[in-house]
Length: 394
Image (cartoon, rainbow, N blue to C red; front, side):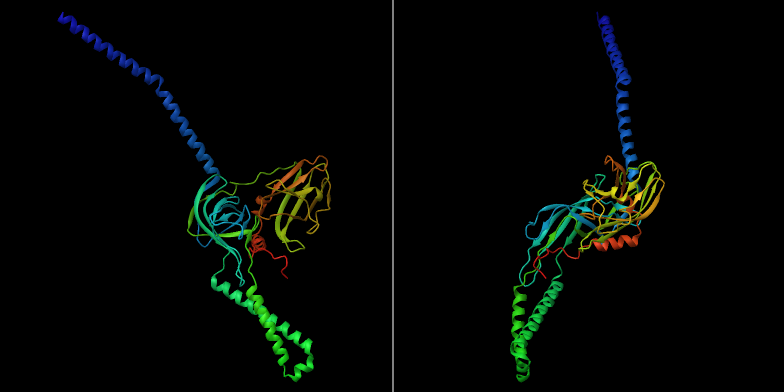
């Protein structure tokens, strides 16, 4: 019996061993390939991201220094009277920021900001101000970048005091001049001679007192920053960023077979009323189609799909031209727009059905505009101050 028990025990052990081997073989054949396929798929996904990354960036990095300034425009009105400290807002980068190796912050990058300080205008000619701080950027490719940036409309106290004193002296001097003239007109030149000029001096003293009162009563200007106004944000620290390829954010365009429209220059100008809202484009047009096109069929369309027709207040060289099949022309055409900082497309419509034939990006064309022209455009767009205009101010 003992021998039989030993044999039965050994057989049971052998069966368990064979069962374990069979289970292990089953797992090896059926389960492990699944893990292998899953791992392979994950690697493939990473490769796709690397390919996408390589399409956007050159592989180099560059530095934005503290002395560099980022030009932005706010997305909402910031009013020194109505805005509250702590309010959040967004701004948008209005022109590419480049380092030595290329673009590091493309146009269209969003910036998150907070109103850190604000003050309304006060008596004694003290202007209102707002101070803004920025904490992070969101690039068009979805990256969130922490920053430390700031912008303020507040003048240095010494500079502001100097301007207030100069203005008050102007008020007092003007008051004195007016008082002297009033005395001269009231008492006449004979009285002035007989009194050795005391009547004129007395009138000037009274006028000066009135002028001083005006200067003490005078209130400063309130701050108003509106969408389209360009603000200049200075970074508090250096930033190291990857460099984008020139083609990374190239705007989509539409071309019509046989029709070639080339934008060779883009100039920002003021309209006859002094407002900086005019874009004048220099174009060369080659019409090798079977249709006749006109300058009146051209329009500018912004990224909000708002349409702007050619302006009679600017250059109308191409505006009234009829370009027949086989003809080539060159000239300029102007458009009045609501915001020079937005993205625009020069669009040609088919006058018969109003369908879009050609759509050319001004952002793409602007990259080829001479730097000298870009600097002039920047000076025109730069706002010297952000104060509300007084409708009764002379």
